[in-house]
Image (tube, rainbow, N blue to C red; front, top):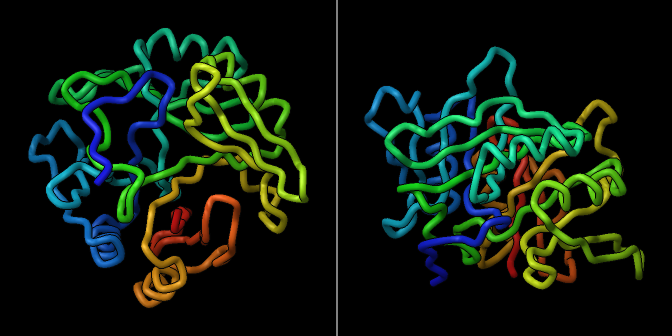
Length: 256
């Protein structure tokens, strides 16, 4: 088991799903990953809730908040000060879409942002909520990756906001980059937008969940209503596939 009680600043520490049909999403992810859904009873939470595995917090969920808003997974990067990070986002050429705002129940403070290209991500300043209690194992999120149309712009933006460094290349025909915290700890990835993605689709962060058998998980996801976007395929990190859930949300699975 990979249990966590805290995360270092600059590390993705939480993911959540905005869904246009929460009942369907709860059923889908419960069947695919064995998650249990736990709604937050406080009306101020706006329908937010938690996915749990073995009684541990895995991820969050909530309803989409505006007409036409697509269902999507969101990546949260932990920070010491959400307000200062929001200012850094603006200073680096990004936008703050919502917040910073205190999360009901004293969970922490957060802001929803976009980078220079329009890729959404969130920043999270923890208080009572510390992030995912399980990660980096089957049934939990294990990786977060930016699919970018402008690698150079991303290389300038994220180091200015999170003090990340970046390593990687296009050697061997596989162009891939790793974001590093403190110059040594790998915290996330980046790759060029895959061929075939429609031009109107903006860059985006992809959440990866661990599985024990990628091909079997793809088959089960399809039976439950998901669509395979790419794969299954072998990569240097493991066998992976990119899926679109029943509400159109994109996510990836990988056997590490």
